Length: 434
Image (cartoon, rainbow, N blue to C red; front, side):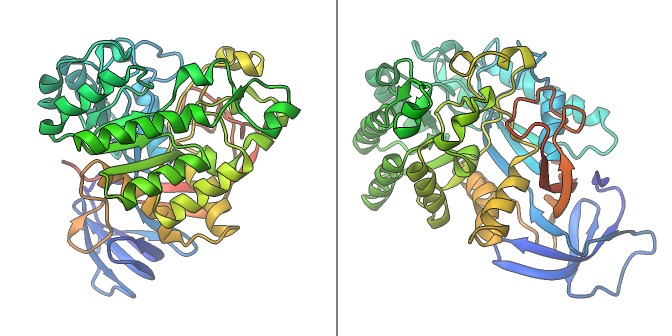
């Protein structure tokens, strides 16, 4: 990884620069000095004598990626992922900001836990020579223990350094959801909710349709998502609190979000990255690492999600990185705990599928993985402009590497791409000091 602590000048030569804020896609020299982008030009001639030269031909300089929500193993399940390995995985995948769901043990449901996690990140960063680890943005739990039963002390949590409120699990009490929206409105923090009716889902492990039948897997009907999304949108319309809809996974769900936006409701939405690359058709392998929640959609769901993100109906792509140990996942598909890792894999696989082989513009992908997620948090997005902090990554879309436990920074390797060669790897990360 490129050293990116801002203590010396670096010149990235003739690199392709992508920046959504200025709609820039150009080849240029980029000078980084003292943690700032000092200059960008087609050819820089005034360069500090001590500057490190970085060859950028064939590589791409992108704004740092922003992950709306993922899971940490620490505290409670350090065998799956420590905070240090999570941050290293985020850095390796090009993420400069990581949102962490409160599904730890104990849960992030009080200010002391929030402060502890933020302080732990700072201690880890101080121990690293390059100090270019992503910043951590904890979500404060909506309910005690993130169990969906009793509200947390929302005002106290809002005064702590949380990025917003989320349980990371679906709330099943509609009255509680409405009360939460009422109490949260004056606090002015982002709210992220996952809409899933667990009664309708029942024991479903695959999206109901032709492939769940062919493969003999218990079906999870589309209505388990859409009934819950519709109910939530009714509450949003009544209360007026802005809401981010997590883990959108169905074509009908995309339609509901489109209609809500057309009606002027204050909603944004994201979909997990693997739902753009795979569908229920791919479950023929019965790979436990394809056991996700929500489950992979049918091909028409996958197509609708791709189009939804491409057109901006679905605002962002989330990673929802969910580490599990080898033992956790070495069971039959229906018994496997849901979730897969993704921080180190998402950019390369999405770029290869949607940009190189597909019809997405590179700026569209950057917008969905960087600009829009930051906007969903109400933050200023990363940008690559002169006299701005250097929050960016150097990406080689043609780099080939094999996904193995030894090539991953994450402690867990629960991914369907394990043992496979994939294209695209981050070569360097710059994270400005606060």
